[in-house]
Image (cartoon, rainbow, N blue to C red; front, side):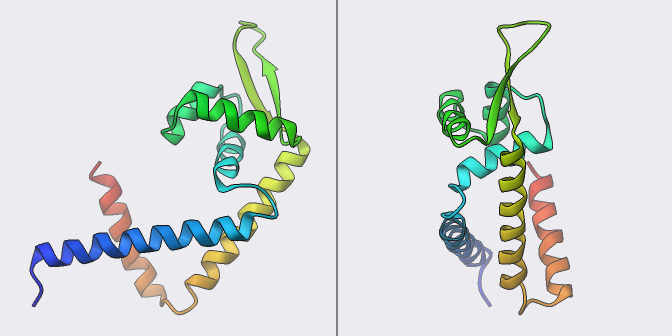
Length: 141
């Protein structure tokens, strides 16, 4: 029987491998669309419109300068627009364009299909247990 420390180490090792494999696979799948970090910004803006750069940075746990750089790329690609707040013209919000909405939807479908394929050999019961474990770990923050 493995010790708790050995089990924890195995969990950590597998988690890192899974994370790296998933990131690599998703980046390869999405290279025809856009980098994963750009997609994350688009998805967040779609989920909650009227967010400024600092709010997005906080939600993604990155710097505001990183979001500024990413948003500039997305604006050049035609996926985002800047909108000034009417109540305070100094505040700038980011808004999805029609093209940004379309690419976000396409990428979401690609990611969903990727995970659907990855989970084909996993039973419903295993997914339920795994989801409970993830929820438990997330609740302990």
